[in-house]
Image (cartoon, rainbow, N blue to C red; front, top):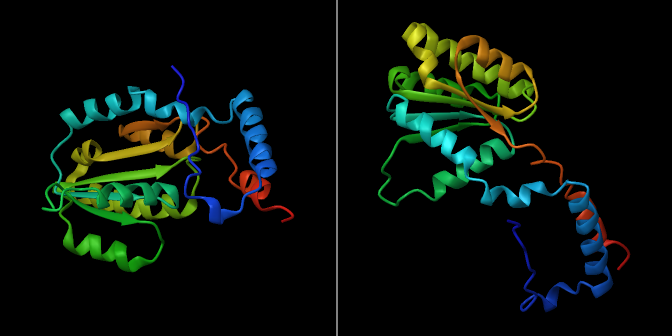
Length: 199
C-alpha cells in the first residue's frame, strides 16, 4: 500500500508560488521518491514499530514520571505528544531534557523518584554528545538508587545501524527501539530553495 499526498491550494493565493516552482518541487519529489529518499511517507502505514513499543509497555514497570533526553526532533516530538494529552492531566508527568543546562537536570534529581520513573534516551546517530552526557548523569542516578532494577526502567531509541548508544544499551540490558531508516534523509533546504529561488 502506498500513502498518497495531495496539495490543497484553495487558500494559498497569497503565497504567490508560481506554477513552475511547484513543478520543480514535484520533479524533485518524484526523483527523491524514486531514489528511496521519501520512504518515511509510508511510515504511518507500518504498525510494527508501535506494536513493539506497546509490547514493551505491557511488561514495563509503571511510571509516574517519564524523562526524555534528546535534542531537536527527539525532544520536539515528545513535547507535541505531551500537548495532545487529555486536559485532565492524567498519566505520567513528562520531563524533556534537551539541553546540557544543569538546572533542569538538578530539578529532576531533586523532585523525581527514580523508582517511579522511566528514562528514555533518544539519538538517531547514537553519538549526540549532549544527549549522551545528560543521559549518563540520569542513568547513573537511577542505578545508584535502584541497582540492577534500574535496567527495566531505561529505554534507548536510536538508528538501526550499529552506534555507541545502541551498544551501550545492549551491554546493560536496556530495552531498545529503532528509528526507521530514511527518516531524516529528506533535506528541507532543497524544496525550500525550489520554492523561493529568483522571484
